[in-house]
Length: 352
Image (cartoon, one colour):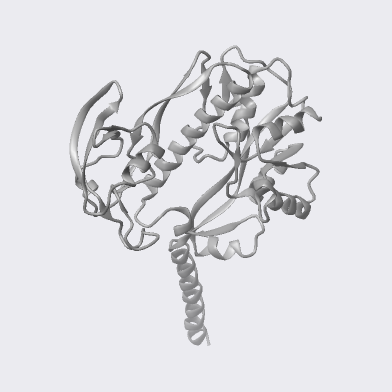
């Protein structure tokens, strides 16, 4: 009898082994999606240090999400979790952008967000702070265009056809006068930094963008993506911000509030713990961002008393409306506060 049972047991063992092997293999298959989950709510007085800054009992917190490449397990799990979200890779980064380029772009946006937050906070406390512009930085080059063989990431464009380049806006205005096929003269600085660079002059042909990138036929340009203004913050107070590996512009509002609070004698938090999200412009305008509902989860988990969310001046589907919906779903006691400007945030804090 045993001689007939043993093969059956062996087949059963083999079946489970194969099933286990398939599950392991499936787990390593990368899909064209990213998954996002709630991250942390970081207390900003541990991240930002203002020279001769004030200390206080309350706190401002930036909120984050975590992101990773989705495998089959993450993909399926996302359909059964309110906290998780799936994004197609084209929603995260354009075709042709590597993970390394994406990370570099996010870190540059974080740097710009910090600088802008400093200017906003200083301006509201009547302390001098301003930007000096030094041209436009090349951050990424489009494959297959003329710039690929001539420009390098980190190049600083300072002139086009003998016209000074001050910032991205004026560069785009100058380029608007040229058509596909035109050859234009560029002057740029190449090197590790402004103090250790050489001036380079070269000609680049305006070419049509690759089909997968162009919003419409006949659109062209230099062949660079995500150019940024190379600007220097000038102020007489030292500020150190250690945001570690967090990227993107979405902490701008909270950075500006933390810096403002350290610059003033009174604690505007009045001992409360305030979380939030939103980009910030030099004029104190707060912009909408992604991942709002997951940031509400992060703030609630950290015990925040209030959550600041951009409202898009009351538009439907804004970060604020998403935050309100999420707060109701999880039953949080946090105040969800609609914010469109830096001053809106100060008005709420004054009302506490």
